Length: 431
Ligand SMILES: *[C@@H]1O[C@H](CO)[C@@H](O)[C@H](O)[C@H]1NC(C)=O
Ligand SMILES: *[C@@H]1O[C@H](CO)[C@@H](O)[C@H](O)[C@H]1NC(C)=O
Ligand SMILES: *[C@@H]1O[C@H](CO)[C@@H](O)[C@H](O)[C@H]1NC(C)=O
Ligand SMILES: *[C@@H]1O[C@H](CO)[C@@H](O)[C@H](O)[C@H]1NC(C)=O
Ligand SMILES: *[C@@H]1O[C@H](CO)[C@@H](O)[C@H](O)[C@H]1NC(C)=O
Ligand SMILES: *[C@@H]1O[C@H](CO)[C@@H](O)[C@H](O)[C@H]1NC(C)=O
Ligand SMILES: *[C@@H]1O[C@H](CO)[C@@H](O)[C@H](O)[C@H]1NC(C)=O
Ligand SMILES: *[C@@H]1O[C@H](CO)[C@@H](O)[C@H](O)[C@H]1NC(C)=O
Ligand SMILES: *[C@@H]1O[C@H](CO)[C@@H](O)[C@H](O)[C@H]1NC(C)=O
Image (cartoon, rainbow, N blue to C red; front, side):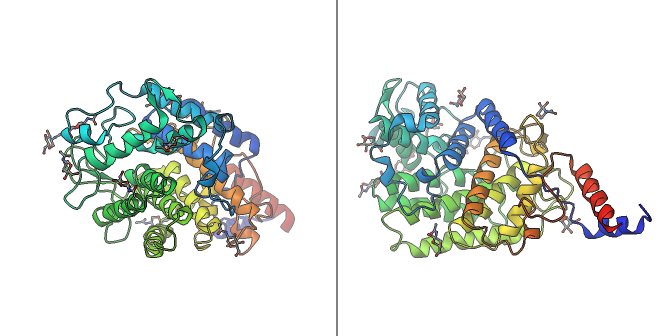
């Protein structure tokens, strides 16, 4: 090097986003770790969606094909979605033997029963779509004394009639009291909408939309980002949790896409427009809060909290889906930057690091089952976006993951080494 001046200039002008593009082999490791480490109800549910989005995209509401994912349920063979059947089967094997919640007088009449014993009323619902798919592909096979279809319907009725509600009608995320968690928007409304679209029941789809609306009414703060947990007593988290905002945007987009594939899309265009603008307001508010290495802090607006790659990954996945669904390409550059940033934190054994502890949301953890699923979702979205012609990327430089990315070529080196490497290459070329 002749002088240090160009180095300093480069350092000053270069974004610190490390453009680590996961190779297929490392992405496979991420997928395998996801399969190994998920244990909680919502983790298994989230994993089922990640598997669908990455391996069976045409069966998801995010499909970009012209065929309805619901039409494909007729004649679906169980062998064709074995991983999903396995998850549904495990769920039914773990399902409490008592089919109804007898402490709640309403449940006897409606036949409501949670898929799993869980203090969180909302979390087991994340498995509802997997159970419906298992039902469709096995012709309502019985497991542990109940058919998949009956278990799904009991879960629906549990949500509709047994779970406590707020005075406005929002279905609680907790079983023992009315308390709203942003998480629930990913777990519950997409299942209500999916059940409704599959069974041509517009009332259920409208209820899914209404639940998103009611959650937003309570959780949205003046800066348009959502608080994590409000109302009720015990656990509280009024902070702007990145994963909570990610659950919210992704859950609302799944409801949007479910309406699109239902028979009621033209009837419900104003609901779809609302969902679109509620998603956008979160993206717009979060956009300025991306760190220099391409991720978000655990509490979005609080730079003193640690960075969390897990929630960041689900935001990136959702931003790219907004593009593949033709809603808007506006969030593509941010999403690509975030996915690149997240990828730089995947270690060589396929674990996403620098994550929030999924069981203690204010603390940093060492690994995250849901985070593994979010990375799988992020790459499923990225690959689809890529195959559809990379809309919204104004130049190669906007896509740190892309083949033509200028400064940062694929590398598995840690962030700083990667940056130094590119700088050295840069200096070398200049000399
Ligand atoms: C989630 O899946 C894992 C792995 O299959 C299983 O061991 C666990 O019991 C499941 N959790 C629940 C709550 O069903
Ligand atoms: C998006 O728009 C393109 C061009 O009009 C169209 O070919 C494609 O089918 C649309 N995709 C979706 C998911 O609607
Ligand atoms: C059953 O219903 C009662 C009354 O609503 C509720 O307190 C309890 O948490 C429910 N149990 C389960 C397992 O959902
Ligand atoms: C029972 O169901 C009715 C009508 O669905 C509802 O208004 C009432 O709040 C429910 N009661 C309980 C304890 O869940
Ligand atoms: C379960 O599958 C059967 C047979 O395919 C179908 O008739 C029924 O509607 C399904 N149940 C649910 C809740 O989807
Ligand atoms: C739609 O689902 C709700 C809740 O299960 C049920 O009460 C209603 O009868 C259904 N409507 C139709 C048209 O099937
Ligand atoms: C929360 O409130 C409910 C009823 O309002 C009460 O039964 C419960 O003990 C309270 N829980 C805590 C942790 O204070
Ligand atoms: C927090 O980080 C963001 C993104 O790097 C930056 O725009 C913002 O100014 C920082 N805020 C504070 C208070 O440091
Ligand atoms: C990757 O991260 C996981 C979880 O923190 C850890 O157990 C594993 O040892 C790490 N692998 C390497 C090669 O550092």
